[in-house]
Image (cartoon, rainbow over all chains, first blue to last red):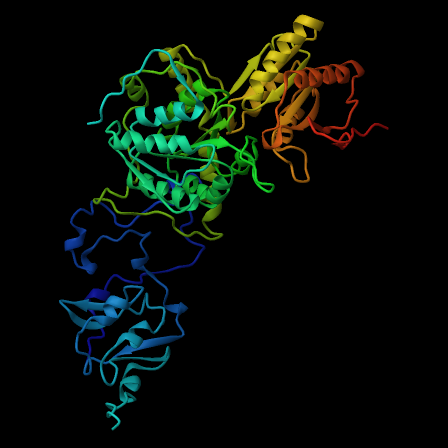
Length: 151
Length: 411
C-alpha cells in the first residue's frame, strides 16, 4: 500500500489561489512583477529536498489548485515498475518520486490532464483516472486485471 | 577585450551609422535583430563590429521582429546591456512584445528609424510607427539629425539602466532624411563615451542563481492594476533622471538637450510645434519670416515624446497667440495625437492660445520651408482675428481639393 502521508508533501498547498487577503498597494508590489522563487540565498537549493526548501510566498509550490481538477489519477504501487515515464511527462511536476521510486501524486498541483495514465507502460496501467470524489480504497479495489494478449 | 576604434574629432556619418557607433561605444552585450529598411545598417554594423572584434558581444539573427524583441527581453532579463533597431512594419510586429519589455521593467534601447505603415507599402519616413508605440510604456526620445541620433542613443542607456527608472527607451530618427543623410558628427572618444554610460548594474537578473526569479507572471484583476500604476509612476518620475543625463552630457560635450526645445520663442506670437526633422525646417522658416516680414515666429520641438512634457510645453507656449501642431501620421478618424496632447497642455494654461492641427508629410512627402512659412502666416491671421479662421485640422502638402475638418463653435 502506498504512503498517503508523504514527507515530500509536507509544505505543499498551504494557500488557496484567491483574492481578498494580503493584497498590496501599487507602491508595494514588486518592480516589473518579477517574483523571487525562494526566501534568502538559494545558491544550494538544488541540493535540497523539496520539503527543505525555503519557497517564497510567490512560489506556486505553496499554493493549491486542487479545485481545478474534475477527475484525478490514482496510483497503484503494486503494478508500478518505477520506470519514471509519468514523472518525465507530467507537465505540472505533480508526480512525486524519490531516488527513482514512485511515491504518489501531488494532488495540490495535479490538474487531472491524464498524461501520466496515457504514458504508463504497465499492464494493467499503474495510473488510472477516477472521479475526484472516489476514495482511494474503492479505486484500488476496482483495478482491472492484466489483459491477455489476443492470439 | 574589444579592439579600440580609431575616430576623428569630426566624422561624416549618417544617422544609422551614428546610432551603430553609439551601440559599439556602449559595448552592448546582445543585439537580437530582424533587419528592416531603413534601420538595417544599425544592426548590420553592430554585427560587423562583433565579427571584427570591436565589441565583446553577441549578434542574434532571428525569424521576425516579434522574435527580435522577445530575444532582447530574454537577454535583458538575464542581466545584459541590450539593444536593437527596427522600423515600420517591423515595429508593428514588435508591438505586442514592447509592452512585455516595459511591463517587466527591462532597460532595452530600441533605435527606431521612423517609417510609414502600410498600406500602401512605403519605405519613407513618417511617424506612424512612433505613434504606434506611444502607449507602450517606453521612454521615447527624438533625434532631428545624425549627431542627435548618436548623442541620444548614448543618453538612452544611461537613463534606461538607472535603477530608479529601469524602463526601455526608444530613440527615434526620421527614415532616410536622418538615417541616410551623411552629416558632420562629433563623436566622443570610446573611453569617454563608455564612462559616461558606465557599467550596467543588473536588477533581478536571471543569471543570478542565488536568487532565482520569475519574469512574466500572470496577474488578474486583483494585481494587474497596481503593477501598471507602479510602472506609470516610474515613467512619469523618469524626467529628473533624463534631465540629469542631459546635463552630464552637456558638461562632456557642450551639446545641451532639453525634453522640450525652443527656438526663437522669447518674443514669439505664433509657433509651430513639431517632431523630428520637421523641426529644423520650421526653424529656418521662422528665421526667414522674421527677417522678411517681421512676423514673430518661433518653434517648439519635442525631444522627449514619452513621458510627455506637459508642463514644459505649457511653459514654452504660454505667451504665444496661435500654435500649429504638426502630426506626421494619419490620424485615422481623430485629431492628430500630438495635437491632442499639446491642446491638453495648453487648455490648463491661463492664456489658452489658439491651437490648430496640420497633418503633413505622410509616407515621406517633403515638408518644405515655404509650406512652414505659409503655416506661420496662417497662425498670424488667426492671432490677428482673435479666433481660428480655418478648420482646426487641415492637411498640408496634399494634392487635390483642400481637406480640413472640425471648426470652432462660434455662436
